Amino acid sequence: MTFKTLLLLFAMCFLLTGCSLWGSIFGESEEEELPPDQLMSEGMENYERGFYEDANEAFEKIKDRYPYSRFALEAELKLADTLFKRHEYAEAVEAYQDFERLHPKNSHIPYVIYQQGMCHFEQTRGEDRDQAEIMSAREHFERLIKKFPKSIYARRAERKIRECYIILAEHELYVGRFYYQKRKYRAAYARFRYVVEKYPDLGQYHEALEYMAKCKEKIPEEDAEAGGSWWYRLLHPID
View (spheres, rainbow, N blue to C red):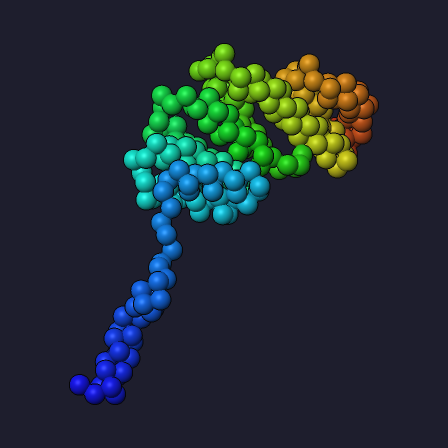
């Protein structure tokens, strides 16, 4: 066999096998598959440094490649934490819920329930937003306290519940002030009265009382503009 023939065969083999043949000839190998303990160490290091995308990749590899390793459960939980840190709250709450459903007896369940509440809580920013998220947050915190009253997360949940009530009260004040500015004094009065009745122990109580007094002074003007009709007063009572 001539040298040209050998060279031609070598070139054909190289084209057929690609880079793997080149790597084997010169001692190069494909990316080494790290064991689960090293992946976990790498993931936690990136997590602590705030490199959440890289951390997520490491935790995903553990979950996919080593589902029966002793690191799989921790990686599953850290995946949820990573989503939370990345402000992907809808995805995070699903991940926490899946963890609770699959591992209901795990010692981290109080934390997992707390984090579910926090996912909803962090989505409530601003007085004019839909309050459904804060109601969901409160429900998770209350469930945590009822189920694990001695947990350190139950004590944190108690503080968060108070914050939830403050946000709800501030929302009612926001709507009440909006009605007041629109000269809808009876509707505003109803909102402020609701704050006084439902949230008496919060700081918004005194502001609501002041607005109630202002509304009572202005209600005759609103009635006059409405023609003083009895049906209007019936539909918009103040007491």
